[in-house]
Image 1 (cartoon, rainbow, N blue to C red):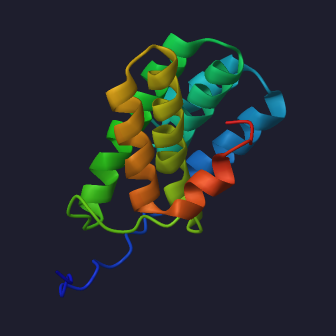
Image 2: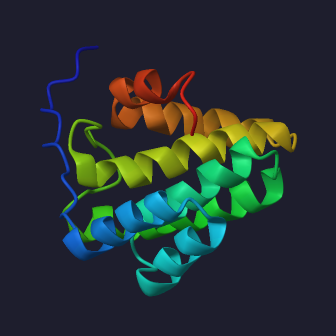
Length: 144
């Protein structure tokens, strides 16, 4: 049966210039502490949590990566809902403010897989593809 309902419009999270500037500064410092300060200062900004999650995962610290990614994922869901998202529909990778949420979802999937939580890993991987297949393509093989 063909789906006659139109796909919902893409959800575009709002930019957060101050948080992004703080993340750029943290990147120059290159320390976990600098990124943690950004997450503490801007706790609703998924990109800060994504940076912490990616750094932890790349360092082999799977449990902290999982925790950071889950925090950023939930903060991102809150923002998506406030931006009109109804639980489905595109969340484009090409829109930079969406990338923090999508990166959290990616790391959450990978970390869940590492701790043997296969169902969660698969669910998050599918959710990422449902949001935007380009996100998985962009993140695959890249340092998270």
